[in-house]
Amino acid sequence: MAAHSHAGRVKVALVGIGKIALDQHVPALAASPDFVLAATISRKGAVPGVAAFTDFARFLDERPDVPVVSLCLPPVPRYEYAAAALKAGRHVMLEKPPGATLAEVHALEAMAKERGLTLFATWHSRMAHAVAPAKAWLAGKHINRAHITWREDVRKWHPGQDWVFEPGGMGVFDPGINALSILTEILPQPVHLTSARLVFPENRQTPIAAELTFSGHVTADFDWRQEGPQTWDIEIETTEGRLALRMGGNVLEIDGKPHAGENTIMGEYPALYARMADLLGTGASDVDLSPMVHVADAMTLGRRETTAAFHF
Image 1 (tube, helix red, strand yellow):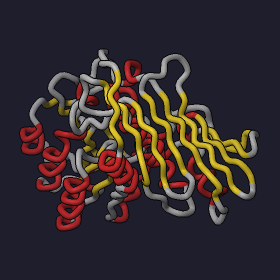
Image 2 (image 1 turned 120 degrees about the vertical axis):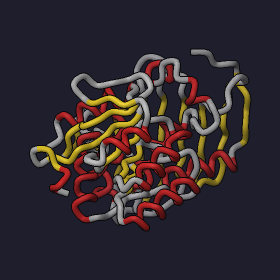
Image 3 (image 1 turned 180 degrees about the horizontal axis):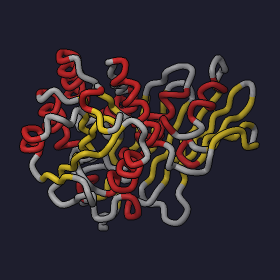
């Protein structure tokens, strides 16, 4: 790895310079002891002082010195980029959700394995400050019931981004999968979906709200129409007390009292890049698709309802 390093740091290319890349990936890389942002690939976006490409094939051809590609573009086009990067011998990080379908991510996983490359399907919410302490507290406990409330304003987080309402864009599951990534990480026993209600605006292809029921008395309420304060809560009742994760997994309460965490989301992406450095160091991959399985199951099992048209 050292052959690719820049003052000891590994070069990374960011593909898709939109809101998530500029808000999270760029600052995380700027602060990283492991990586340096060496190139961007985007039709419109760029980062001052960083080599900018508009064509991915040209980047792969001209920059063999950049061994890691981090993909931040929407899920539908992502497979082609990831496959091209792996074929060119680059390690790949996938923004969540890791793809538009489960099968394409399985194909990427096989491709990476065949070539001895690292593939990291990232779930940034798993890196939230209170997720690890919540998992530790729940270990070995019996869960009576659990409920997720994940309500936010799509206009705030995806302003004018119509792709989220197109096939493969996931709709309210774009944020909801963050909650499912935490749930699948912290529960001592796995659960599976048993029913779902999905609410589609009459002019859109993906749901704007969803209610999910899982085995083990676990339920979830996702809504993309919440204005004002945003709600990202997971509440779990056990035989030995009540746990609540607030602020998207960053704050942990036990029996209503603060227990661990920090009231900020800015630690998640630095932790993802630290994890990528660990994976590169050990030659491993990390492709856990359990959060995406729940979304696919909801799309399969969900009872569909139609609501008023949605416009940005």
